[in-house]
Image 1: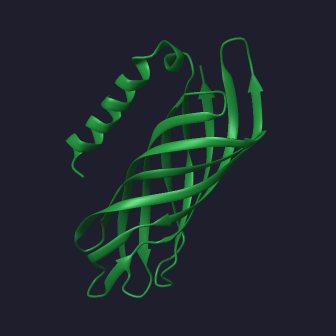
Image 2: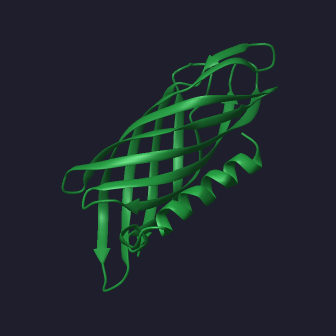
Image 3: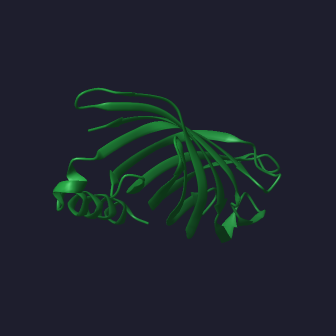
Length: 177
């Protein structure tokens, strides 16, 4: 996905969120770090950064967008690259401080070549700490996701990488308005 595609998704999500007074009053921003372990044993566990923008649709349902950047480190070939994830996320609260959700988007993997592929994250998230003020809320959240991403055609220095399926753990600080 090129830069125009990434930013058009962000702009569209912001416009949808601001078009409804209900959604505009319940916006939250999350920034954190992620740890990604591909199921392919040829990769090291690596970390990256994430940014999440969410709108509360209902008391326990939220819609948002996520952008995540992660380092890829292929042990067998010594090739180091990146994985950029951009997606739309839907989260549903299950019990207090626990939610389940899905992210649908695209991943751009770059090792010795670049491959853009559809991506699905199925995740659970929990609020570790939270505090609510008169107008602002804050929280520390932990998320664990099963990631599915086919990368047929991705090359790691002469070694084919067919997928970047794996586990992604994210810790983030969220500020809501």
